[in-house]
Amino acid sequence: MILDLQYAALSFIYSFEFQIALRVSSIFPLVSLNFQGGSSMHITPQDYLLQVNSKDGTWCLGFQQSSVTHGIAILGDLVLKDKIIVYDLGGQRLGWSDYNCKFSSLSTICYRVMQKNQSEEPVYLNIKN
Image 1 (cartoon, rainbow, N blue to C red):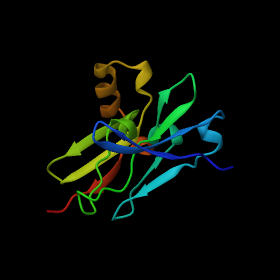
Image 2 (image 1 turned 30 degrees about the vertical axis):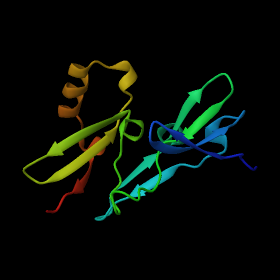
Image 3 (image 1 turned 135 degrees about the vertical axis):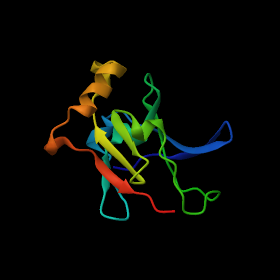
């Protein structure tokens, strides 16, 4: 299948817009973000594509290479939704765990993070200065 991509400027942020009549999950792949140390974050098309117009099926790609940050990528709310982020300042690590945030209040999320069992531990990414 060929998608008709057009390059568009939106509020000084450049993005690829495209129209599609099918479900994005049937066309676009699961993407793995692999970090140094072996940690990986797997994101679905709904985590990296943003539906701009539901009437005509217009979508935008939610990330792209930056020429400004020189090898640094910022993972924003589109990628980090439905994830619990854990900051381990003492160990200088950042962790995440998949979580369906639609069905919880913030206090419930905090409680469940503290009650996680061994098999549901967050994945940690070591941060070095």
